[in-house]
Figure 1: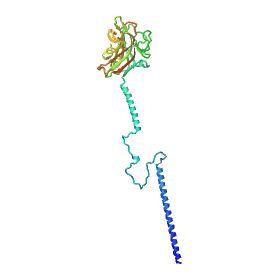
Figure 2: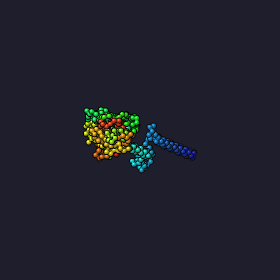
Figure 3: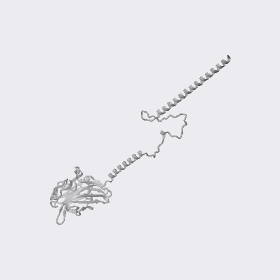
Figure 4: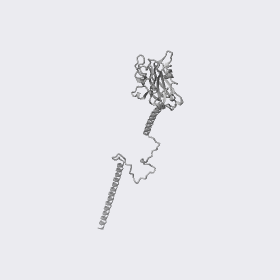
Length: 336
């Protein structure tokens, strides 16, 4: 009987031990499952942290395994330093465009600074007469002169003199001593027209060029009565007296141009008699066509002077009849 009880006791012990092992296995399985679930949660969290949020920004914080040993030699992406000397293709493009813009701007400034043209006039703009001023010098000086001509003489317009001059040198208009009529007969003439914008004579001087149709009185012995003077009048003359003329006492403050002027064809720059039987070197004769007049101012003493370009028509009261004076077009003054 005691044997049965002993056998029964062994059976019970074995059964109890089997149950305990199973419970331990289940607990271990549950623990392992919990760990796996935790790892999955961590992975999902990391994935979520690496995905852009609604604002389009990426979270810079990256969660890592706490047990991992950090490598102090690895530089985080956000702290990577870029060498200031490095230049990207985009920067190069921007710099090239900037350089081109700078060069373009400099070219424009350079063009303005180095523009050789001081004055150009073809008499075609509506505002032309606002730039040219007329003065009757004889009227200012000798109002009691019995041979006084009281008009302005100089005009701008379109020439239409059949058999003489019917066109300007270019365009339609030009500057003339009465555009479509003869010079007044038996009058003392001393009339100027000047460009009403002064300029400073540069260090190297100036060149001048224009075209002229010339018709002044020439006696059979080739003596010439009447003609045109061309000079640069200093600003001080206009400030003091409001006039400038080669015979009004202002000659000391003028810059001669005809000393170096030439005509093409030759022969139209010569000596003629003006008022008071004084002789001048200027434009005179009968050209029958436009002639090219060129010249320059090169005297070092003229540099820096503020001047006006002046045309002066002079003729004595015995200069004869049936002449048309002078017609001028396409005037240019440039730096040498």
